[in-house]
Amino acid sequence: MTTATLARPLHATPATTPDGRAPVVFRGDTGSDAVTLLAAARADVVRVGFSAGAPDRTAVAALVAEVEEEVAAVGRTRADVAVLLDVEVVVVADAAAARAKSAQLACIDAMAGVVWPAAATRVVTTADQVHAAATRLAREVGADGAYVIPLAGSADLLAAVSRAG
Image (cartoon, helix red, strand yellow):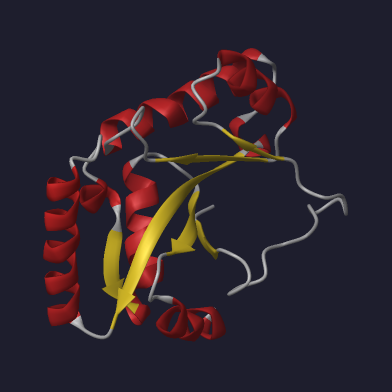
């Protein structure tokens, strides 16, 4: 199961699970063993993302593996829990704009002295490539899909993605 789910309000996410109840969603990247264990035991969806504690693909893949281990430890199957990667997306008009915006954001990160290189974990792409880029990044870390979070200036172009499915 690999899905790219767009953040509300641009795209409606399922309000119920297949059995008709509201899905239980946990953050799996809080750094708390108790939260990870509770998520493994109760969650339908565990969301993970890049952060100071998980600044690159290897670290996020380790978070996904930790969730998988805890799911198994509490007697659930991996199919019982969807792990989604939060993917920050900047949507631009074309490939040239994507290259320019990526360079600009990397420069801003460097000047700001951010704790992790967000430019390396953020997707900057055209509207028609959002799904593929977010899904590719999710697969790289072992997640089942992506939860797309549009950043400033992306809403107009991302609306086209939402309409396209």
